Image 1 (cartoon, rainbow, N blue to C red):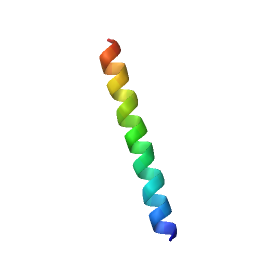
Image 2: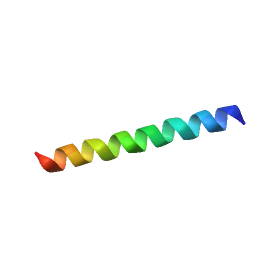
Image 3: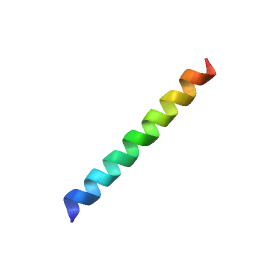
Image 4: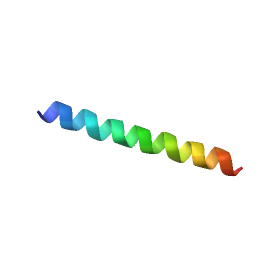
Amino acid sequence: NEADKLAQDAFMCIMRYMGDENLKRGQT
């Protein structure tokens, strides 16, 4: 299903983004 693949990609991007933000916040 194309919609499922799109949703999964978006979810992974969001999770990666959130993780990066947490790492930056932890460094400062």
